Length: 356
Image 1 (cartoon, one colour):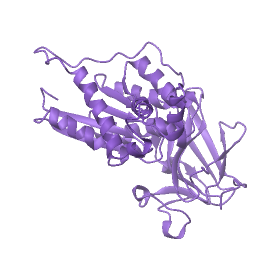
Image 2 (tube, rainbow, N blue to C red; image 1 turned 180 degrees about the vertical axis):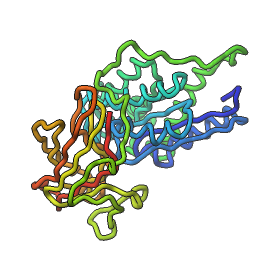
Image 3 (cartoon, rainbow, N blue to C red; image 1 turned 90 degrees about the vertical axis):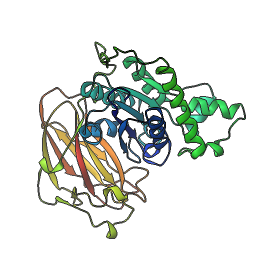
C-alpha cells in the first residue's frame, strides 16, 4: 500500500458485509491512511450465506478479481442463525477460505470479525463462547490470523451500561454499531503498523501449518457450472419466471440461469473430481427434496427447504457427500417424490454445484 501505491482489499460475508455498514467505513479508513494509494475494493457479501458457501465461492467472487492483499471475513452470525452449523462445518468453511487465500497470495493478510445476534449475545453474557466464534477462533489461532471480537466488546459495553442493544442496532448494526466495529479494526491496524516501514521491508509469506486443523477443510472448494451435468427429462437451464412463482427472489439472482426441475423422478448425473460435493441452490416456498447417491452407493434423502424459505427463494449450499476418497466420482440426483411439511412443491433450482 505504502510503497507501490496500490492494493486489493476484499470483504466476504453475509448480509452484514453486503449492507452499507462496517465495510465502507473500513474502506474509508484505509483511504485516509494511504491517501496516495489506488485501492481496489471487492464487496463479496451475499445475504444469508454461511462460511460453507463462502469457501466455495471465494475463487469466483474474490480471487478471480486479481491478487488479493487483505481479506476481511464475517460469517459468525450466519453460521449460527442461518446454517446452524456444527463445529466441524464452521471450521471447514473458515479454514477453506484461509487456505485458498494463502495459496493465492502467501503474503496476504486476513481479519476475521465476530458480529453478534441476540442469542449469541446472551451466551457471551453468560460467560460462554458461541460455537461458531469458538470454531472460527480455532482456525485463526492455527493460521495466526487476526480477529476482531466485536461481539465481546458489545457485551462488555451493554453490561457496563455504556450501550444498549437498540443503540448498537441489532443483528444488522446501526451506524453506531458499525462505527464501533470499524474503530476496533482501525485500532488493530494502528497496533500492527505503529512502526515506520523499514527501508528494506519486503512482503513476507505466511507459512501454512504442517497439517490442517480439519482434514476435510474446503481449501479446494469451487463452484461448477450446473450445465456440466447430464440432465434428463424434466430439467431445464433457464431464468425462472419469478413473477409467477410464490416467494420473493433477491435482485442479485433475478436474471441468473439456474438448472431447474419440479417433477418428481427427474434425474441427472454429475461427474466430478474431489472429496466432497453439494449444490448452491435457491430454496423457496416450493423447494422439494432430492435423493442423491454417489458411485452407485445407497441413496440419501436431502430436503432443500429451509426455515427461511417460506417467503424467500433462499440461497444456501447443501452438501450431499463429504469425506469421499480423493479422485473421480459420479453423483446421481433425483427429484424426490415427497416434500417437507411446509413446502408447496418439489422444485430443485441449482445455481452451481459445489466441489471440493
